[in-house]
Picture 1 (tube, rainbow, N blue to C red):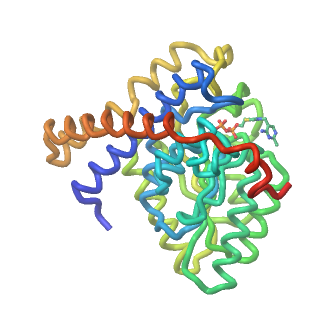
Picture 2: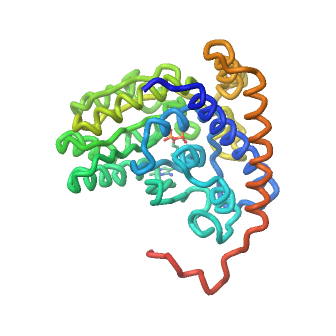
Length: 320
Ligand SMILES: Cc1ncc(C[n+]2csc(CCOP(=O)(O)OP(=O)(O)O)c2C)c(N)n1
């Protein structure tokens, strides 16, 4: 289905919201208002928004600790997302999960996950549920290039192929696993070769800073999976524009490399392209920018003014 101007503006809106959300969260972290660690997805907004636009609200999704943007793009209430970071009761996990454990079954969000590769079998299990229940839901699992050496990841890829499950393996290849370049970890040039070895269909997104390319490739994969075509592995070439986590001083990559990617930053390039190629006006872009500024203030106010969980709630919803 071709994207309308309204869809494209909505995509830009969500990408910008994610960027500003992560920037505000970074400030909270630096002020000591967010505990633990925090892995911003700054630079990777186009994969989150492009891929999630191809999903239905009731489709399943899992993601990693770098999943704030993907969760918001899937439909997570950004108020509940920010409140969760600040540990408030109004957070999506009642303030007990924090940055790495956003969960909301009402939108198919089966959880971020702090363990590399661990969201993959959860999504494959959800896809098995869809197949057994004969619903036409699909599952999409986001993971990084660092996950492709995990045993559980390889085992579940195999099962997904054998059982022909409706699951999309979405690899955000941002060239680094924490501080290790992908070239030092994996033999083949392309990670899709791993999946092809299991007999899985594959697709490449050479420029995953382009949300439309991400959307088109993911939509084709989702439609095939929904129609019984089985799993597919998508490798999306992307880049994070900030450190792995706050406090990472990035000794493993050069400032020049980061600067090259900054020139391609989709937050600035995409709106220019909407004006140039899709008949969007500069006023429409400015309206989105202003809306997001106001929205972030509302989100921040909601989170800061929300109550803390009380001590007697500490064991509620805890299963382990
Ligand atoms: C099983 C496991 N091993 C190691 C870690 C420590 N660790 C946290 S993030 C990370 C790098 C993962 O990189 P990648 O999968 O490429 O995702 P990215 O951080 O680039 O989004 C590692 C090794 C972990 N969380 N889980």
